Length: 166
Image (cartoon, rainbow, N blue to C red; front, top):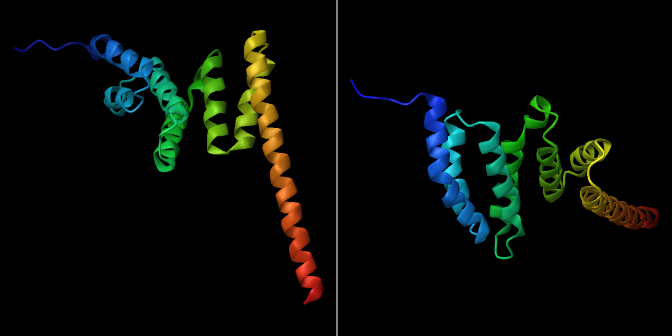
């Protein structure tokens, strides 16, 4: 009779083997390699939150690469959101996950969702450096929103003027 490992022990063994590969890929900025190692663990449904979190961190970090194509960037941000999804609900103590989920939504341009996660991080009274970083994102969201409002107002004014002439 063949010996098989219990699922939790098999996952641990996979992580021990995968960890150095993932760490080296992240360290060297080879963000496409790390998800290749982590995705099979997540797809099997056996992945613990720590594996999902690692996949999310890698995926949200990928868009920072200067040579990434826009479609690939968007796919990686979507993968980060999917990896993090539900984790803050199951475990409210995972502040880093909420912070990175806010960052992923920010990168996707989903400012309302990003703002909600960032404000929840601030409500937890994080360390000063984290609060400063979160406030920077919130300021960028406000600036982006103000820019969108100004563009909309200019566009509406132009259209109103055109209608008045017609």
